[in-house]
Length: 106
Image 1 (cartoon, helix red, strand yellow):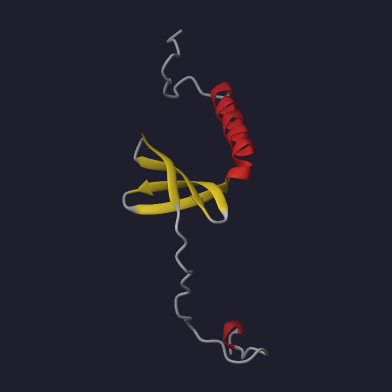
Image 2 (cartoon, rainbow, N blue to C red):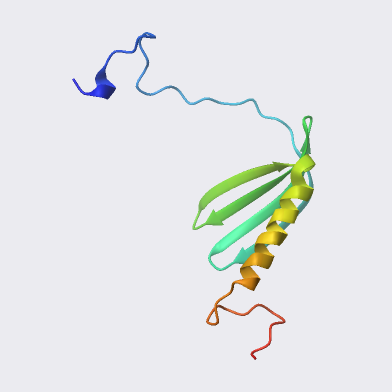
């Protein structure tokens, strides 16, 4: 018997559980912006529901979507870290890296 075939001391566990559905929560869209970067599309949506405001960031790459949600209480800190990462990237860019708008050739 291999390790994952041992009986559970907690009783029978089904091999595949039915999908867990969360109840739908109404969300109000406050603002939405879309940006295309290379092959990726990012949608930033500021929303609000009974639990509070949040930023939903959705990345779409060829139909595959990934989403993160940042509570509004953390947006300032999140923005600060993104700005620091952008600054660090600009400071450590390689000579053959694509230039951003406003950078000179020499």
